[in-house]
Length: 351
Image (cartoon, rainbow, N blue to C red; front, side, top):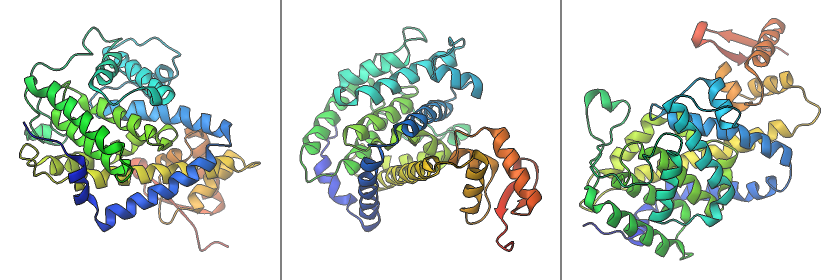
């Protein structure tokens, strides 16, 4: 059996770019504290949007999906799930809500993970809350076509032993102020993925556990800006970083840096997205069409309708399209391409 020593592995992570990312996130965390003490109406709005995006994105990566309209109703608990996928989405919704509301009371222990896994599948039959009795080979979405393994998880008989070991090792390092949780958490999640305690679709649970551990450490940005959505947008890099960091994992010679660096970049991106949305939503007396205008004007280079809606998730597609049409007519923006490839750019030559 391999051993787990996060304190020892921590030293290899102290590289300039990684340390710079940690410092950047620390700065964002300081600004987060100021923002979350005010503007409660805006925060509640962002939280609702983030839950919808997180539930949709994390599940789509594992082939669990429904229409956007049904997804929103399920996340907001305004309909009864009908299909197997919708039942799994409802389970994810409830686990996500539980983590957002009770993260201080959910320990990083095997028993807690079993309960979270049971909740994930509570609407989809009695399939959750048990360790997988057989090993499950993880493949990325792209690599599944070629049947290439990202890594082979530990044997079924070792799952409980390994999971208990990483929980104990994490807690030992976490209680020591010398070790930053921002570096410990991704290492733990990497080990969780390599162990694959529950087998199929453990990646969904790993992303929920990531939020849980970040919230416990005071990094609550995932409540207001969907970390799962950012991962889905960069899923090829996500899977590649897992593959790279899991090489020689059994021999205890794996390199944690690729996955840790990727996760830090995602967390930093979530903070930037959060702060940007807060800035736009906090402006009083400005119409939704004017907010769309500010987004396009503040973008260097081209931007698509989908990207605009991502920055203004509370604004409908119809309103965004109407604003873009008006700006094109006025000559304020230039339309590039057509169809699904349509993009827009601010006309900086117009006075």
